[in-house]
Image (cartoon, rainbow, N blue to C red; front, side, top):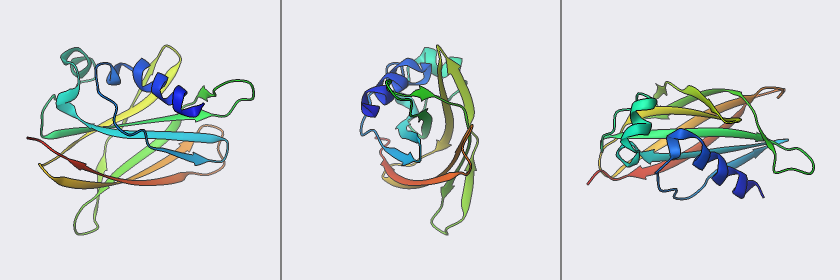
Length: 148
């Protein structure tokens, strides 16, 4: 059920219009599900990139994070959260990825752009504290990007 709501969120949020969804990573944290995915920025439509001031480039990536709170009898409800993201470089040094909130048609998502190189594997550390949650959840994911 959460898989369907995540697809709906990623499709409904303007950032994701026109973007091919690959795997749909998610992390459960108590009564919340955190959905997170990253794509090459050049897969965004020109309109979406312009609206969200994201440079469409094969050398840029975009991270999208959304949070759904469990609600009995529904597929859950989107909630706001504090989202802090860092890319961990080869020297294990965190490089912060500025994230900004998109709220549209009842959905909330957080996006951030970062540089990528061909064949580069990027390790993300995503710290999420949903509104109403007692503590933050740290999500770690890595993804390989291709620019050619």
